[in-house]
Length: 117
Image 1 (cartoon, rainbow, N blue to C red):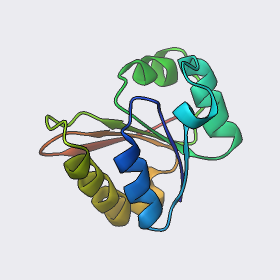
Image 2 (image 1 turned 45 degrees about the vertical axis):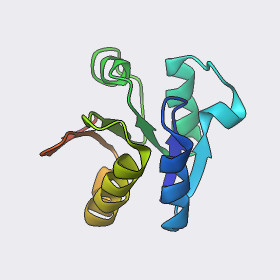
Image 3 (image 1 turned 60 degrees about the vertical axis):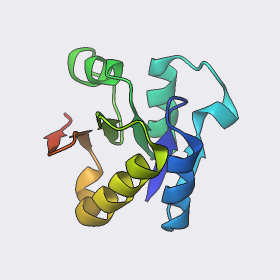
Image 4 (image 1 turned 180 degrees about the vertical axis):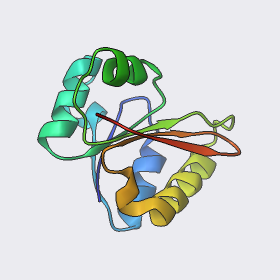
C-alpha cells in the first residue's frame, strides 16, 4: 500500500511501514509545515493513505468535504514510536484494502472505520 506520513508521525513509524513492504513518503522530507489541505491534496494526487496524529483532518474530510484516498488518525495513549509502529503495521496487515476510502481512527482498544463520501 501507499502511505503519506504527516510531519507529526515519527520516522520510526514510517520506517516500520517501509520494512513491511509499503511505499511511504514523509511530509517532513518534502515540505515541512505544509498546510493540512495541501497534505490531503498531495495524498489524494499520489493515491496515498494519510497517517497522522492531527484531529483537524477529520474536520477537513467530513465537514469541509475535502477528498482523500484514506486517513489513519492515530489516537494511541503511548508516545513510544516502536509501539505505534507495531500497532500500525498490524492494523494495515489486518484491514488492508478496507483502509482505502476510509477514515480510520485508531485508539488503544478499538479501531473505528468510517467510509468517506
